[in-house]
Length: 363
Image (tube, rainbow, N blue to C red; front, side, top):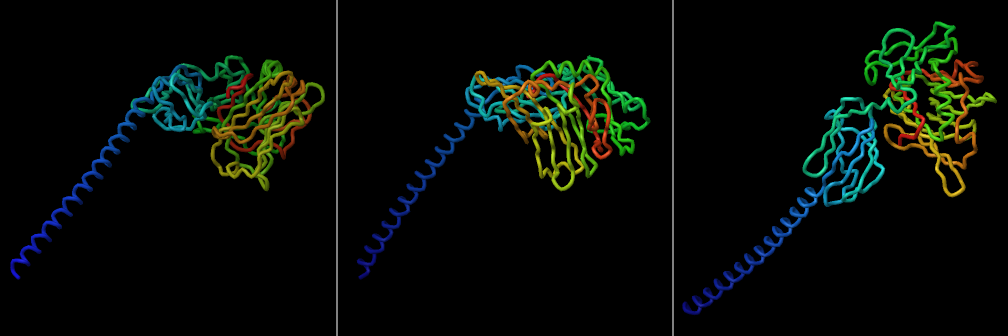
């Protein structure tokens, strides 16, 4: 009996040993496969990272042209864009940047001469210092950093300084110290109903806009009134109609409006951010698009770099060009006749900074 028991025990031990060896082998094979797979994935990731390289080709204000100098395609959403070492939002004209391809990104923050722009993707960041003046392409550029006096100086080089009021009343916006960028303008309540800023050399601005099939209005605002706030009013040469009207209506609808030729309107509603006492970056772009013999006019509204509204219509001559009267372009109120008939209930109340007009589409 003992010999049989010994034999059975020996057989049992052999079976257990074989099972352990088998399990060990299986575990080793799985571990090897996982390790090999992980190494392959890491290698592929490393190759992808190394292959994602960009170069900054040009910088024009807040518009940066990139070139993919690597071997891998780059999704623009994976780019890290920094302004003076602070990460910023941006808009890209393409989603995928193929090897050798280009992308144009627009930074949705104010970019000044001397600022550092850094792009991060792949293994190495690229950095350039801005040497281009964004006011150089503008027909009007108000930094509003003066603090004293009643004139906001134009930095575009076109001498289109902006004077407070209409020259016959003493109710003006005041200077805002520590605005969004440097100083700015504070539009306090006005019981006279007079427009806030009158643009000097208005004929120069009107002529440039009237001769162009495209324009851009770009500014930062912080609203503080639960009412109609008209920010830009450009009235027609002949019939006192608004060739251009930009306004924000705070209240039940919380709406933002852009009207062209007194008829074509983008009306964005239910915008909770309008009345949150925060700074908002507004960019309005008007441009023409031609499809064969048909010319369409497109109006686009960007808020903090995001496209909020887009309207395209078959363009009439007056929609293609605004036809603003010489004394008919005002900031801070709506006008019902050229340079007058301002409505106390339609004045802009809040803060305004870095107001710029271009006679071209910058986006």
